[in-house]
Image 1 (cartoon, rainbow, N blue to C red):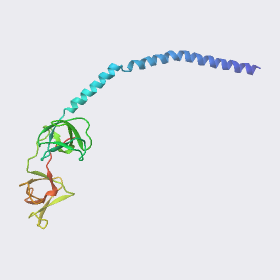
Image 2 (tube, one colour):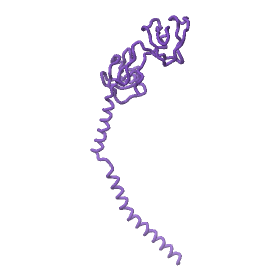
Image 3 (cartoon, rainbow, N blue to C red):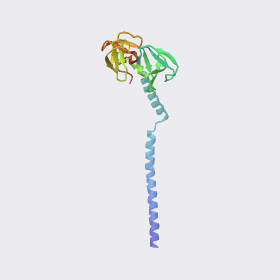
Image 4 (cartoon, helix red, strand yellow):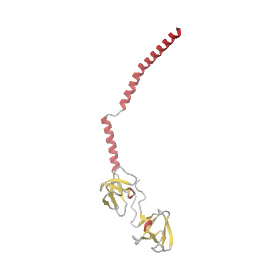
Length: 201
């Protein structure tokens, strides 16, 4: 009987302690909730922050870049080579870049609105454009330089891939006449227009 009374008292004591804890914990929870509520942004504050973010994007969007494609740069309606070309921007012209760059394509808003290939843009004033007679070797390892503009011409040397060469003229029949770093002929398939040392990052 005493054991039964002890259990009842013990249970009543636990319930009393639990109720007391709940009563004292509730105001504490309410204070925390108030604190949480004070750090939440109002609708007007959220709108203001959103506008601030849009303003920062707009500043970034005003970036000036320059066309470095010697034959001009196609502007396409969508970011794919299969998209309609809506115009061409000449070599050396400035363009205004917009946010939303992909790996290969950049949206622009001026002088035309559309998409251009990223590798043919460089920051305005970041680097001087290379001269018209500059070419860069694009080969797996190197390009052979021949005595004559023919695959049967004697090989007098080679130029490593990525190195620049100076051409004498635009070339003909698939060959470019090179004067620097050595005089001879390189197959046109191994020559590309030189790009500025600083390109679009």
